[in-house]
Image: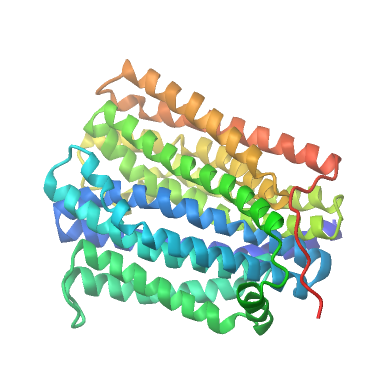
Length: 460
């Protein structure tokens, strides 16, 4: 019992700052959507497709670079700060290259909306957003490589503080640049993008200031002296990160596809689903921090070759996560109106209210399934088993889940009452993904596997 309590304390000390950062990001996303919705109907219509498309693109680059966190965590567990600083430098080197590539893709990315048949006014706004997303996405990619050092060694308070600083900047800049407040120009959709770019640059500056000199020294050696840069290990790391990035991309696209399929149930179902999406985020976003915290501690244990410690870390993490899910699920089932009214349910017609409340009462199925799939994904990443993540997500989501939901909705066009069933079916497949992830984790622990091969920092 005492050992479990100590593990729980370690998990919470690492995870709570990450949970705070995740909640802050959620709030900023809501502020951004509210500002665009109030600016004009065109910016509201354009923001949905533009945001999902940019999330898929930027998410790929960020997840690829984010694999650095697992490398840092293992190095820290094995050899301490020196080895972790070297692995962080390698991650930053990769982050710089990928950030430049993403920014150079801006003229290409801005052409994506014109491939659709949506109204020209909407596609023009989407194009604006996607153009700027290449730039703030590039900075986000670099920030991910920098934050991976602090998260990997468990110093997540830095991540929280830096994130809060950036969120405060973005709050004022978004309101100012979208509506022309605080003496700033009124830029509408473009203002939302530029405010995000400014906040990410502020976050970059904070990370640069807080990053230890040892990391910069290693990075200088990698870039200018080419000391310790092993091409084989670098390519192996990029390959594993690539699988992780593609997995994140197809996950984001799968979520977008689910929304497109729901549109086939009619405008009532689509409106009810939009209201519930935010409530669903409340149920799952804080769990991301716990999953990352578990991943860091598991990575430390793998680096220390202390495999018997890993099941204890996983058990305690799941116990904390499930307690949170139980609390949120209670409100989703017993008092859905309290959760839904702040996000526009109160002003909606009776049909939308009825469909929204019915859907809210089954969201617990997705929260439960997501707990196991997300946590399992984070743990497998700490083992470096990213190819399994990719294949499992691709097969279960795109070859089974999405086609199944699409087929069953064909017979219920215009039937908003079928919306809860779609959520339950999607949750079942997400739960199966989680089961497969934990089966692979069990095999990896039993066989003491480690898919991360790291070069050592050069001596002297």
